[in-house]
Length: 333
Image 1: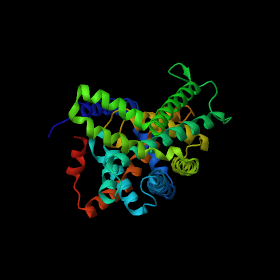
Image 2: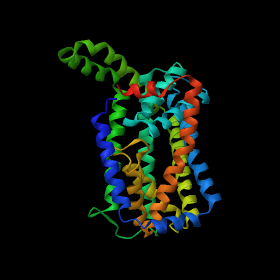
Image 3: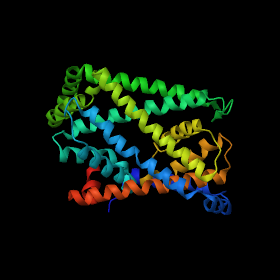
Image 4: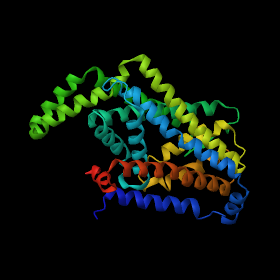
């Protein structure tokens, strides 16, 4: 089996980060915290965390409405579950490709438009996460004068907002000036790779169609509100697990920790984001003076248990669809 260089880098980075998290861990304290955990709240936390996946499917519908109005929930949910499962057990983070491919297989939505809609999906995620992190910093319980790598934490949030604004402007440029973009591509392609000209033209037009939700203020608002509900649900799941393990940090801490984890898992890693998730959780909880052993307990408990339901659900739908893991793995080629 061929191993990609990205997979090797991801594996190596995960191993290093896991070693960094665990090398000073007092495992007797972790075991004690697990024995003292409120099992009912642990189960509730995992159940609430699993709800973000149907919320993703619901949010996907208005993004796709301009090119495929009123898509039924079922194919959106199946594609989402299979895609999230793929992220958990397959290398190269191909979950988004899988989501788009499964949806295009079960509906009339072209793959390129489905994939473009997921770019919009992630842009909304990034904006909401940064917004919630900034709100957490306004809470009086946020650690004063917190420095991250020698800089105030608020500087990172501000930089992230600037990046998101630039991305949003670029996406709007694609939506508003698709023909101009295609002409630039055609000029470049004729000189460099003429055989890709027609295929690229079709892909760019489909990509612009997938971003067309940005043209409609009403639809934009609906997607924004669903995105807000999704990430507040995730934060609620975090907070319930805080309570289950006896962590006394405020609810606003979950908004900040959530953002730190999302930024952390953006780096290359193994399937399931092992390593980046744990070290990001530890870093975020340290700001709120959570004991290292308790932070590690929370990170491991939430991370491992929250992966199980959606992985099982995704595998179930994969089997019912007649697809195989090998077909999904081949998508990255």
